[in-house]
Image (cartoon, rainbow, N blue to C red):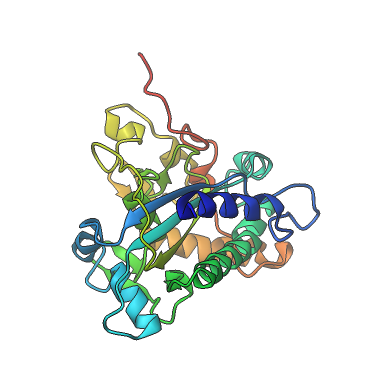
Length: 281
């Protein structure tokens, strides 16, 4: 069996066909066709993340062993995917200037429930094939850290896993710009199944962001309703306070969700749905 192609096909099939990947009014999906990449578990980046993110950030080996216990268990591959937010949802949020749209909030809340279902399904599939697997964000070892070297962080970063799998590079706003843009949700599974790693992104880890290509792009700065993004970067504490307290407090009950997200910096910007081309002038 070609495990790599089978996984890509299965993840795509689930995104296209699963009934949970539908807006509550059934007007369309939360997410469009995914991108899927693979990182070798021994990629040096995962050790570097302990310095970049914090010593609490887990390596793939640590994720697998924390959940499944055997000290001899060795991780081989991190399977990572990008779920691009559907165009109709992006369009609805593009019109907003202060609070997330109803569709965006439901994508953040219920779309992430679908993403969790996808994580569990891929773990179960790998186990059917006779391999060990863990979805880091669903594992007992997953924790949030409020005072890491880079501010608010967690013991596993889906963005950094996706970067290691060659799926994108970072932006001024701390998001991951992929070939399908920055408006997305991410997921990953760690397994002891050996899979060929995807081609890494060459150049700087911020290569797809116009700002780091020397262009004057202030789109995400202007779109942020909390002023959490400046030319110096993204303040996670301000962003988190606005997203999980202000926005949720204002529209959470109206939208009937327990989390709303914000996403204004991911919509109405040049990198919303693609890697932005460098302007010629």
